[in-house]
Length: 218
Image 1: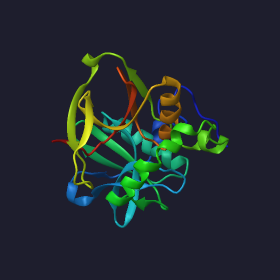
Image 2 (image 1 turned 90 degrees about the horizontal axis):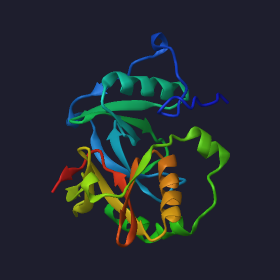
Image 3 (image 1 turned 90 degrees about the vertical axis):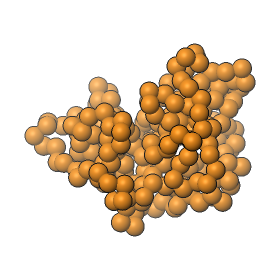
């Protein structure tokens, strides 16, 4: 297996620019549908898009088209099938999930009830998961000046969600825990599936927030 280059922010090997193929950018929202999916090895809702009968999970947001294309090329080198959508803040990279299921509102409620299993689980991910799955960065914000509370709407849910806005992006509340180590453990599990996550410190402990790339403020 090809080793990862630690100098690469995406956790993927660097390739010469001349060898990088390009991915068509989906400019129109009518080209795809925003949704949330559940993956076979996970109990979490993951932001996704539906395109031509297939589901693509969120990987990351990049400010420049060149950077998004570079990441897509590296993902394809690893056997993934990515697509790119344009959003006001830049370009979103998504990867094909052939075995994903659509997360309906009923499914989302069930996942909310079972998400506590993440809290009680302390086992480390398998070596394959830690090596092959994308690891998104996370931050711990300790000052309220670093974010703004708000309510958002996501395309596949009728109810509004509690969220924070950080650098123009929206993150929905996933869970609040008293112990920071438990919070970091859950964040690592979420990040192995490509969920970009932020932790905030408050009077109740540590709140976990997951990026909602297609959310709008309510």
